[in-house]
Image (tube, rainbow, N blue to C red; front, side, top):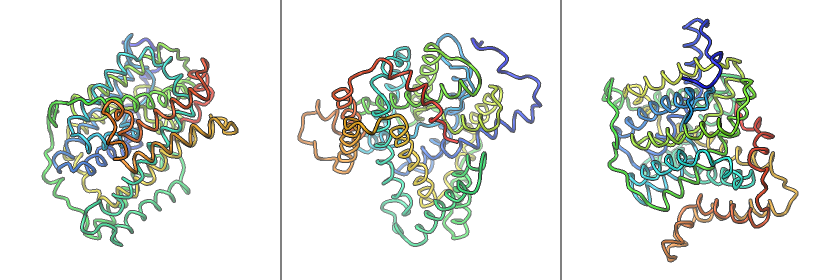
Length: 449
């Protein structure tokens, strides 16, 4: 079954303890897993039934994606205790694709993205050399910046809602944000890891006392459902949408590489390029299967790596339990419907913190791994972030250009990434040692406790 030393599975731990440790991993990643379908649903106007399905299938696919990585073979799976969840960097691209084209184009691009990662998993070690920290950090920063308007739209109560920006909504949204900030200030370890989840729970309880919570979605949801391929219709394909998601895949792979390297040190295991290739293919397979069932792209969750470091439990049996629990939750729509109780303003308050962390993650990459004393690097960052933000803020500026050119200009993330790639090649060229060496030097930086 495995190419990894079987000692990573411990048979002597009490089953109840193993279960509790697995549940702890689920709790640590739960908010990050469900918030992506909630944001996409709210921005694209999904119905209550569609949102419930989306959350349920997302949890199911998180479990499947996790098990694909844990159980390794010669083709896929890195065989280390990693938990996979929705890729945050894919949120804004998916919203943009769904808004400009249609929902089926989202899943067409996700299928293409997954297939791309599967086919080229063995080559990513070489391809990542074109995504040094100055490029990756700029792209992650662009993604985070483009997400903040979405967060504030929710914080106000949802764009277009009658009570948008009302004192009640602002109080709930900023109250949740302040609560999460205080919890991160005065708590440590696991409590800090689930601060967003606790903030959502407290905010929803406060909203319920104010009469802003509707329990109808939970009452209407069934206890069990079967998964349904192509729930939103047959996928459709668009070159711009596909290119956008492939760029997201490259950024995600670069981040996952750092997480894999950091985790290998935590579990005292040496990994090579073949291990990384199997890890990339597992993510690609998870993305492809997610596209078939209308879920989302998946990537390694760094908060769970931080939890492994904190708990010192490094065996895969715990992660297998976590994956099983996520799959079980995915078959129970009534549990998935509980997330629909969260008001937009409460969700928005948490989103400000979470998406702000995406920006800070990009800035951390830049600050810790990029020589900011070089004018060339500053110019790459300035122009790429400026281009990405400009195209996002003024989306119609390139409408008169030919379609072949608009593939690179219709989306702020694509435009910013293309600018960063070209300018980095112009100013810095390609250094052969950039890819793996820099990743190994800075892998500790990728862990978010």
